Length: 454
Image (tube, rainbow, N blue to C red):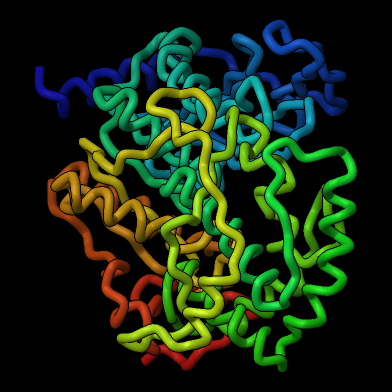
């Protein structure tokens, strides 16, 4: 039986079963209290039914399996296909919860079922996200009584990292992938956080440290040093302008709207342990010993990084001086080849991958897309990766139109084999062009300032 007819037969069987089944109960007005996790001591699992009601014409399945909450929703006219959605980073808290994908309504309208997991843990635990997301495929069959004939993996931010690792770890399980705002460069993200902080300190003339085992008072000591660093990097100071130029190049290269994006992220406050400090400073890997609180050892390294603030052919005297003075950090650990620590992304997909990224995102910058594209090229997989640049500043700040267009183009690619268009994100001239990001931006993104698109 061909896949086409297999999907049709499976879909027809589920339509019949849904039509005969009683309507699912509406979500309770009051949520049940979180329950202790059976797999993670000290963790609580939030009621997956909480504030969750199936959309019209759909049937919902919720529950807890192996310490993770799950939600599954199947449209009445199911096409036999499933989208597995992976959520992003949720901090270091010990209560897990499941949420709906941004394209929930569109999936159902197009005939796709979807499934999502809370994961059994929080933190930057990509491996657990992969395990729990992959488990949804079998769980879907168990709770609905029908296997999915085709599966697409999708995820945002850390969920993009989960997506990239999942399709490489279980290549036969998926037919395509749509990460967005994703950490597609694994530990390269933490190198970027390191770069932003060590260059800031060097330009301000402040000697900082990178403790591999930070003492409890280290965040307070670093905050005290920031009291000297920040004034030296004011937006009108020479050091401040140089730092902005360095961050631009380390986050993806010269591109439209960067000045506004840098101001946007400079004004954003950081969270713990440096609550209230400018956003990028709160991401300094030295605050956690370079482990992201998940991997043993320090995964960051800048020994061979040459920092640039210009695009001249030869480095300037100021650039040579910066590189002499910047703190150099030696990694003691690498991205993991399996699902431990921070799992490696090889950039060797076997299925079509379509990704989106805002060009002003300085939390997970577009350099992550460029890194994945470089790895895919080295592996001879460029034909399986399409990246689209969106003119926005926020992290995971996409309009429904942008996400819907991306998903529709991915599914058409899977169905027909015809690769959709994308942006040449590896070409510095393309990235620096005034119209970069115009082709796939749909609708206004508040706060993004750049020359108008043609």
